[in-house]
Image 1 (cartoon, rainbow, N blue to C red):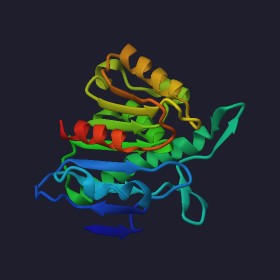
Image 2: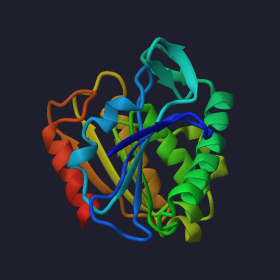
Image 3: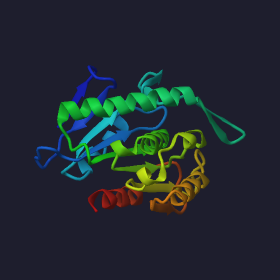
Length: 219
């Protein structure tokens, strides 16, 4: 089942749980820059039946049907982002999660984020700064912003997070070094991310990545 609305903080699409529950777990889908809420929602029907699925549209309009969470430029092969826009989107998403909880009544202790590329960046930023709101995140072809690290919660609060990381070794947009650096940082702070690299894969979600994501969500 699909629903659209513009009455809340963000435009979104919904797939209600296929298994009825009073307070289901929820999975928020966060797309990459230049895409929209329909992108990751295209595989919503293949996600675990027990989850409420909410796919959010980025708050920044980049063009017709193209949205993002913040502006980014690539100079010298490195991404240069607008941190203020990222902060605005981070706070907006935190508010949005609260709005959705009030509307749909999902289990507030079973909130998961799944983000691709820039959506993965936002997943890290929300989970590391507000771990009390998030049970787990899946970051696919993303990176952990160095700028967000000073604002991360204390280690004793972070350790409850479940984290899934997937990244292609041939990713030319955000290289696999970003994923490796995130894994190292998380482990240094007491977390144990489930980490996957995919030989020869680019900036994408392929079948192997999706299969591993499903296994993580169903564990």
